Image (cartoon, rainbow, N blue to C red; front, side, top):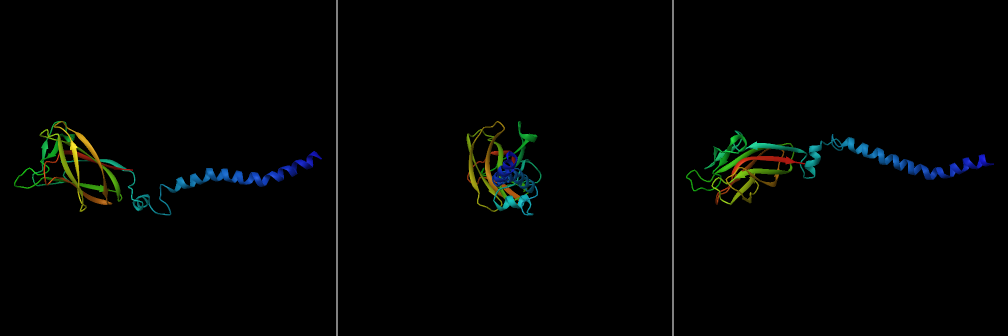
Length: 193
């Protein structure tokens, strides 16, 4: 009699045990499936396009670009100069309005990124004349510029970070100040993710 009761008892609990066992299996297997999709994208869409669609940039950087790099452009009074303590030994100075005949100094960085999104831009700067505060206007491509006022000294270099929206491929990031002196720039770094 005991033998016939045991199989019936096991059969009665099986409808309860089966959903629990399947639920535990799903908790282990489903994350593995999701993780395997992430590197190649979702639904056949590359990760960069997925990130761009939600407005964030994929992992990138940090990439450092020296102010004196040949791919950058200088205009007006801006010029490359040697400076002790600077990365690479040089900076770009005379950015902004110095009342010179050639006009206000502008430094334009050429920045390449893999996808459209928001990136962290850190700029390394100094105030050659020792002024305690200077303001720089940062402009990305044709978007309206925004002003950043930074404290600094003649010792190289302090740093400040801002978020900028960059589009996939080539971008122009300009440092200027039409109304006053901007800080001298040593380098920038771009990163995301």
